[in-house]
Structure formats: structure tokens, C-alpha cells
Length: 248
Image 1: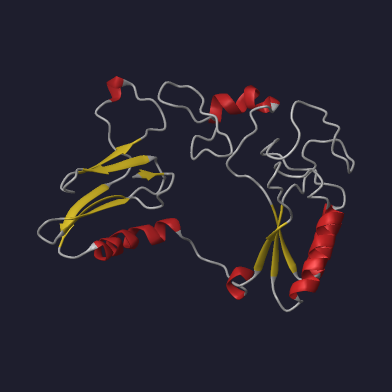
Image 2 (image 1 turned 120 degrees about the vertical axis):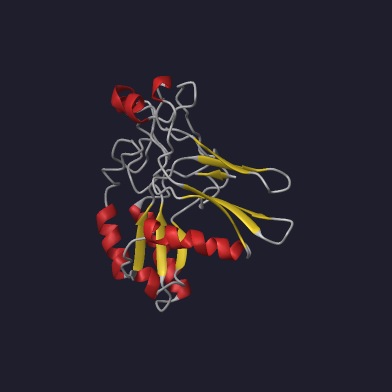
């Protein structure tokens, strides 16, 4: 089991032959990448941690930057989960402020557009088009129902100002480029947001918190050398949209 990808918890649990439950948990609030393994009988548990920097062999032995707990209890997986929860909840949660999510959990979420055939249409994020689509949606579902809009391509996508979005001034334009830069937005975006809010529509501009466009000048200037993810050989790990892990 890998922590840092599909698993959101740092614990391995094994049902033993005598009815007891064995477990291994790492109390790591810093989120080091890890792989948990066990043998077929579940009697041997282990965890491997990926270090964030290379160690000089002279600095060994290495000390783990977080405690690891191994134990056996009379009980089941839920009892072990309660032990882990006692540590995890105060570490990974903070004081929660109430938001509109708490007041209106049944809101209808919609995307501004999606083109299944050829990716995103360049005009789908136009403020005028989005406003028209949401007005018609409002007429369809009524004003008593909460609506939330996930607005794709609200920025200029790297193109020169204009509605046709065909004049590209540098090496890349279009969706999933120029991250982490989004501004300036498309002309009319701010006014459209105000009108949507007046209609009772919550607006969530799409952003991508995982990717950095490697075609940007600052990637080679400073980002790659200081912040890129690398494999065990020191090579930069790049990522495409469909990959699971390895974001520069």
C-alpha cells in the first residue's frame, strides 16, 4: 500500500490467526512518501520511507523523522482505527469555520463546459457564453435550488486578447498550460462573476494545484533546480494529465 497516492492514511492492519489484530502505524504529520507491506500470513509488517534528500553515508545510522508504532491488541480493525484517529485528528485538522457547504450540502454542481471529442473548446469559458448557459439552467431548475459553477478556461489560456483565441504569442497556449499562472482572466470575467452571484450561483474558477508548465521560462531558470520531483537517480519526473504521481 502506498501512502501519498491512493491511500490517505498511514496504517497497516492484520488479522492474526488467534483472533487478535496486529498493526503498524506511522505518526508522520509531514507526509513523507511511504510503502507499507506485509507477508501472506500478515504476521510480518514493514514500511519503507522515501527520503527528501540524499544522505551522506558518514551520517548513518539514519533516524526516522517520525515515530512508528507496532502493536497487537485484542480487538478488530475498528479498535486500531480509534488508536490512529486519536493521533491523526488533531494533527490533520484545525478549527473549522462554517461555510456555505455546511448550509447547503445539496447544491447542484455544474461544469462550465466539457468537450468529450476533442478536449476543451476554446470558447467554452467565454464569460458571455457561461452567463447564457447558467441563466438557462436557472430557468430549468428554478431559483429555490442552490447552484455551484466550476468554471473552466476562465483565464486567457496564453492567447492574445480576443474572442477567437487563435493568436498564440509563445510556445504554448490553451488548456493545461502556463500553470501556475492564471491571470489576467478573460475580458468580462469579473463582471460575469458579479452577475452569477446576483443569481445565487456560487463560482469556483478551475485551478490545477498539481502541475507546473515545464515550457515556462522560470522552470529552467529556477524551479527545476530547486523544486522539481526527482527519482532515485536524480532525474526530473515529469507528469501528464493521466498519470498518478510524479509531479514536477
